[in-house]
Length: 248
Image (cartoon, rainbow, N blue to C red; front, top):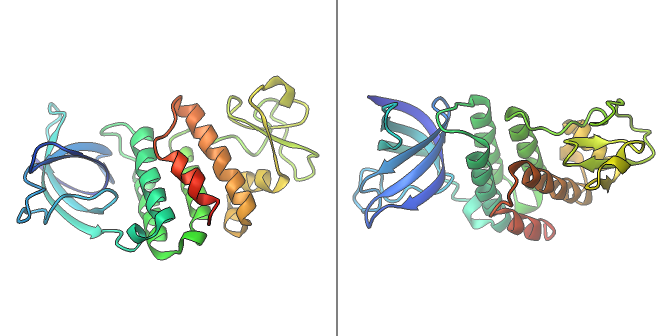
């Protein structure tokens, strides 16, 4: 059965001299593994190898009994030509692909998450490197929210005391899954003291685009630690994000 969908290529593997095995995050089907036979041939129907984080309309053969579908058409509507020339934006796109791969399951669609990813890629395309960090933070929070893993930031994750701007000290604990108040922080060995502005932005994401770079870097460090805790493994693309974001 042939099926049409829109997808983002989030993983590529060379299968042979002429073919690729690809993972797409699609709007209606969810994460999908496909084989693109002959994709690496110059005169293939795909116009050459399918690139990471390219997005577009796709047609593939689909059977529930098969683990690998066959990609028959892919017509890119987003190549990311501009973002591939910007070092930080490029690494943010690679980081987003890894997140999408790790936080989604095969054939489990998340249309809202797909839309968030498309918007994020377009923002990477349209903005200079020094304007990208707030969009990266927002994308991660959206992905965590839609995957059911968003940290609790409107109250203390332990005692449920409602968050307030006048808290004298602010802490974040990955093991507690969110902010913890001064009275509870001693119970969590992994707790980290954070700035009041960081806590306020985590509580009200609408404030994130207006944050200064110091707070954005603080939030991004925190999110990478939190995501690493959730996944119980380090992300391959995270070290480069940590290195580059301090330069922007």
